[in-house]
Image 1 (tube, helix red, strand yellow):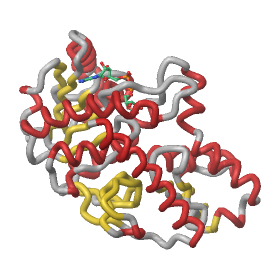
Image 2 (cartoon, helix red, strand yellow):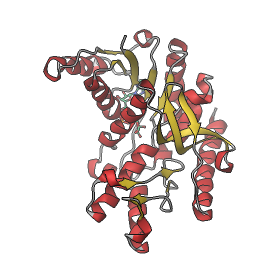
Image 3 (cartoon, helix red, strand yellow):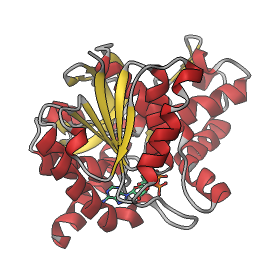
Image 4 (tube, protein in one colour):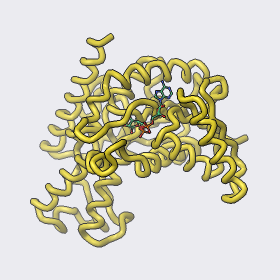
Length: 310
Ligand code: APR
């Protein structure tokens, strides 16, 4: 039997994610949105690509949740996206309400699924999804680190004119202005990146990575990125459904790791059939560890704003 993945939100990120998963063929997909006709139309359009791409999986669109029953993974992309001049944090209270209502619906119908929040501000939304679902911590894991790391690797590969596959890197911390591209452990073909790129230029690349989302928003003007985000989501879905146990930077609940407690923050985790199977504590220098903790503090500030609003 094929696996089942629900994607809530049939906008840019959700629909692109559904399409990528459907194209792979190993999971049936349910696409949910509140806008009438939108998920149905997009899902039917995707389904009709099946004979051309050779995909036998099913994809359906709906405005309800009954069809989502017993999903293996539920991806939550519903919510508003940023526009030029907005930070991810500006989306907090609107998206908190949307994520809360969506997670109640999906958790009731798929009590054993892995919940994969994507809606921004991501770390706060993952925390909310964890709280509302009542799921164990290993079954709530947010997408951000793979995307931020992909941006970092793209810029480093461009700079050095090498394949992106030869750049090993991690971006940790909250998915926001305080994210931590970990330069100390970044290698290119096994060589520390600091030996290949000068300090000042590296700092510029780190900053461009932090601003990577805003750079796209400023081009698009009416929305935010979705090709790299959806590719990052699918990497996680695949590691879970195929039990690949990849070690990927994802947003997970920390309980003491890196000296951070009861907060969802981006760290390397082993992702398999059980969701987060292990949190990895990589070697960080004092400066990087301090930056990670500072980033966690800014996630905590958002959690406090949410708590005060309810
Ligand atoms: N239930 C279901 N769908 C909803 C709900 C809800 N309560 N509220 C909003 N939606 C849907 C919208 O109708 C829209 O189709 O969520 C979709 C969001 O799509 P876009 O506006 O295209 O936004 P997108 O670019 O996909 O980003 C979605 O992911 O990366 C993050 O910051 C981004 O928070 C944003 C989210």
